Every structure is written in structure tokens, then in C-alpha cells.
Image (cartoon, rainbow over all chains, first blue to last red; front, side, top):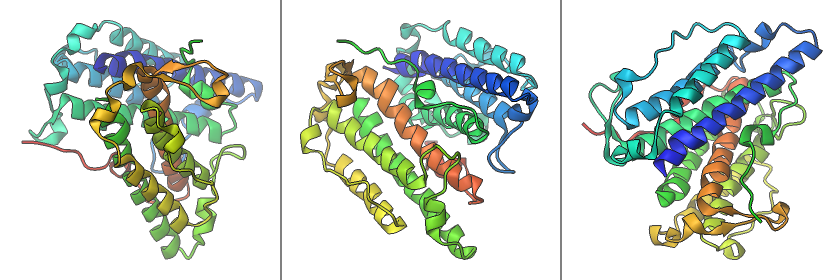
Length: 170
Length: 170
């Protein structure tokens, strides 16, 4: 289930985010608004703008997978210098491509892996704690906030855009 | 892991949501704003207000656990008639109390459980699909949106309020 949560579902959510960004671009074009306005929009003066929300959503997924599999040193680096939708979409695509390099077997020891980050000053979480209490809440937080920034600015996005298609069976 | 995700972590997130609502109430009191104003605030004219976001966050957790364990008929009913913070806090507390009635053993067959909802017209998801692609994204969506409504209105909430305490070990 760790692979399903951290790779398959995270990839799906990032692709849903891309579709939400594309709806933002279509809205901007139809209203003759510079997309840069939406990319720099934020819900509160001291909250991150849309660009930063997308960057952090991507890094939550990328570093989640990398840390759970103890591969953080070989994870791709990103300079967080995107300023256009094209660059931001490339960031999302790069992250999805990175996630696609993982296999379920890579996560065999993930649940009990000791995961730390520089800012935790030597303390750690187990892999399942890290995934459940840190990675997933962060991915959903930043994708939902990106969605909310666009929705607040008039883009016609709905819950289905956020959730994506469901694998219904009959 | 299903119990951890759908009960333990969902309960934690609802308690974090309660603290975020309490910060909203403290902000309203300090600014001499009627809390009803914040409870009815929304980020877009056609998006649900704060009350409804909290109600749906609660129901996503309640019905997630109930459907995964095939106990939806015995789950507590809620009329969605809350209008005050006190009533909304009771709704959150009731939901956390309901989640506390579950044990890990209740989820022994959850992953392969066939889960359906009236609006799915007879189609179903497996339990793990339902949890990963529906329940968790919905819980996080509505808690993040509740947070964003308050943040947008000036309440001093941050990511730590949303994530809650981490079980760091050294």
C-alpha cells in the first residue's frame, strides 16, 4: 500500500493538478488576463503564491518517495526558479517521471525506514509515520491550496478536477 | 495501515481542524467580529462555506470508516444543521468519538471490500481504491479548504496547525 499511496496516487494527484493549472490558463486566455497574474496569486499576503504551492506539492511527492527508499541523494534537484506556466508544467512532468522510476519492491523496507530531514535536528520518524502524517497531508495541502487560489480567482474548477477519474467497476 | 490512515490519522486531522477553528474564534473575538461571519465565509461565490467544509470533512471520515467496514447503516446520522461554532465543534467531537469505536481488526477485510454509494449507480470501488483515491483526498481537501477560508480572512494559522504534532524520535 505504501507504493500505491506514495507513487501511484501521488502521480495521479500531480496530473490532476496539471489539469487544474491548464484550466487556469484557459480561463486567463478567455479573459485576456496575463497568466503571470494567476501564477503569482495567493489567498493571504503571507501565504505562498500559486507557483510556490505547485513547487512544494512536487517536492513533497519527490522527497517523500526518495526518503522512504533512502535515495534522497540521487533525487533530481530543482532550483525553484519557475516563473511561467510552461516551466511549472515541466516541473510537474519531471516529478511524475521521477515517481515512475520506482517499483513496489523499492518500498519493501519503507515502513520501518528511519526518515529524517535537516530541519529535524537529528530526530526521525518511521517511514509509515512520515508517509501518513507528513507526506500525504503535505501533498494534499498544496494541491488543494493551488486549486483554491484558482477557484478564488474565478477559474471553473470543481471537486472532480481535484479527485480525478475513479476506477469504478460494475 | 488502513486503520492508521482511516482512523488514527483522520482523528488527528479532525482534532487539528478543531484547533484551527478555535484560532478562528479567538481571532473573531479579538477583532470583535461575529464568528458567524467566518463560519459563513467562502473562497468563491459558488464554493461551500466554512460550516459546510467542516461538515463534509467529518462525513468523509465517518462514512469512510463506516463503508470500509460495511457498517454504514449503523453509523450516526447528522442533520447538517449546525449554525454555531459550538454546534460545529460538537460535530467534530462526535465524529472523533465515532472513529474511536473502531479497532484494527474491523478493517481485516477492508482492502478488498466492495464499496459503493447511492450516487455511483451500482458501481463500486475496492476498499483500498476507495480509501486511497476518495476518502483521504476528500478529508484533506475539506480540512485544507476550511484552513484556507480562515487564513484568507486574516486568522493566524500555519502549516503546523494543519499537520499537528509529529511523533519525532531521537
